[in-house]
Image (cartoon, rainbow, N blue to C red; front, side, top):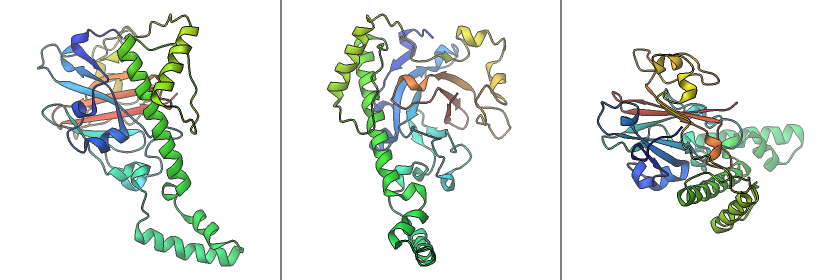
Length: 289
């Protein structure tokens, strides 16, 4: 969707997006763009809202293995932010929602693991270390943590390469450069590879759109035929379920959606953003085909 420059800011800095614990937020969330709400609500005051994508995306759902830290708006593939008067975000949930925030096994869980491992080792004749690994919850295992560290590294690397190239050329380059988890590319090397891949495609890619739709104003959304866009999201919309609701049962006002896979190596198919001005909460929902 073509949005005039005065209404959209590509790839804002973490300092422009997050209100506190900026380094921690920037580790988990990649800021894609900021939208001036006057684009979809011309009579409103200028207010910038942000599209961000979590760096944890790899396989399965974000939050899939951390249900103990779910809440009303933070659960599988749903992330909520408190929004201050300047439009800046603060993660609304328990940070242990993200696997990499669970490096230390809580003492009560560690004790339980040791007791279970001892029984299993004696009963099945395996080593204590094998039994302890088997009984350790997925999120606390060293191999899980190491794999996620690599996922974050690759998603950040690709995001920064795409960001640099978009800001340089004003479009997404064509040609795909696959990145393995054990790749050791520097940012400069990856940028050069992506430029070379684009050159082999004759550089004819014209995809400049950061956002696929804002406020239901894109051609595709208008074809849906709804006079009030929020009606579309009151229940389910395509693969999007569990839309964020207010206390009165009405869905949070819809802001827009984008294609998450454009921005990092492992991204969602569709990323929806909702914002409720009364509660000052923004909710990001991730959808996969």
